[in-house]
Length: 115
Length: 115
Image 1 (cartoon, rainbow over the protein chains, first blue to last red):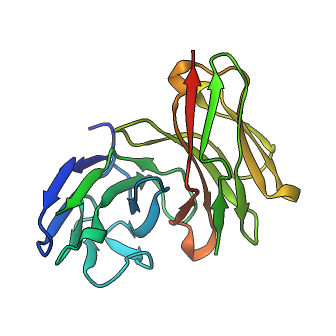
Image 2: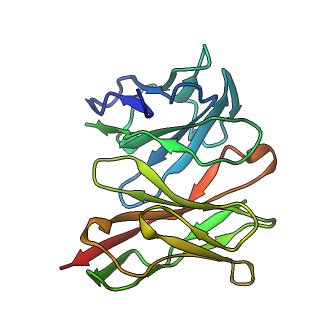
């Protein structure tokens, strides 16, 4: 597709379950970013990849959160043993180049609700 | 570490009036600055960016922003607001070096446009 695609758009799950959020970046974009956005707040950085390599995971809140991008294209953000405080909008973005600050192109996000 | 402050949580203007949204950043070196707009249920769309050079930058939809180093500001302006500009606006700063993939966002300003 033309833009960043995220799935599912909405995810409702019970506390304690694991969830996997998927991001398909713009074709040819080598850098991929994950952000979390709470209600009434701006996006907060989680992690990013250049190709398949995870460059910075300093924003992952704890070890229940992990991300991978095994073939340098689609990425999955996994949250294990979900808690209510994990409820938020999770946004993915991509950009075409590496090695410098660039505008990031965002998807529509996945709204995660933990019951 | 960099930070962004958007002092106004909510702004209301009449259609046709001028608009200025404030953004102040904190960063030790020359920042990379962005304005994004978010409409309900949609992703963030880039309005404009400042990397270097002319401190007055033009963006899409008739928006412009001015970088003022002495005031650590990057305010967004539009001379005449349209009802379709109602949305949430985010200012963001990017850093160079090894953290280039990480954008830091402000908490956003919600714009309401009255007819």
